[in-house]
Length: 202
Image 1 (cartoon, rainbow, N blue to C red):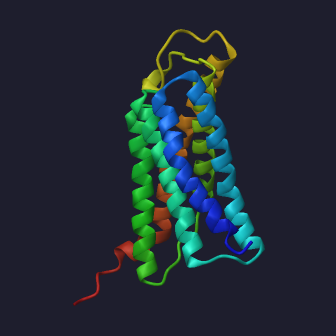
Image 2: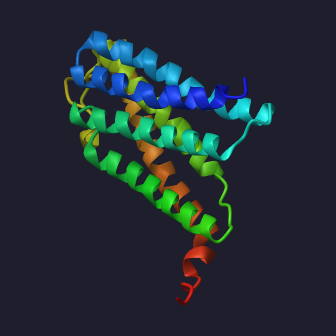
Image 3: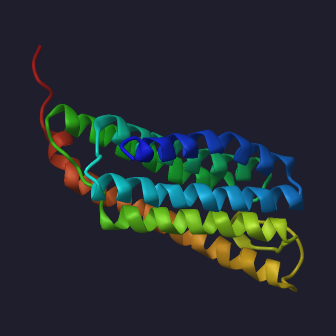
């Protein structure tokens, strides 16, 4: 039990490789397999943190593994979806840029002994992003392809359930972008005092 949260985080990190491979195969059966693997990995994202907090197993290594696995997992799947043209590159750029910004800000704050906790917008952004990507994977597995603005997907008009599922997933992804920007602003407000402080003289 003591190492279970870390094992879950490592498992999520390792699952990123076959998940990306399945997406890049770009076939319906592969997308269905990717959907199952994505769902299982997303569940571990919730479980590892809850187990660690409930049984007082939080450690520096655990926090590092959890944050690293989260960012690598989501970013890798997003980039893979860009390569198969299921998601436009600009969305991946906005979301991944936010991750760099928050990581840099937290590192700077930690150097001064300041902890910047995860905010409400950030948690909601994560939920929207994961739900949207899961919906896209499932829709692609069910042969869903619809026309949608802003380069989110290509194809004909919506006719079947997978097509409408893809539309819903695309809308959620757009909302995730909005929440990404709002969460970035939230982090900047919390950590602005750290950024504004003059650098120590050497």
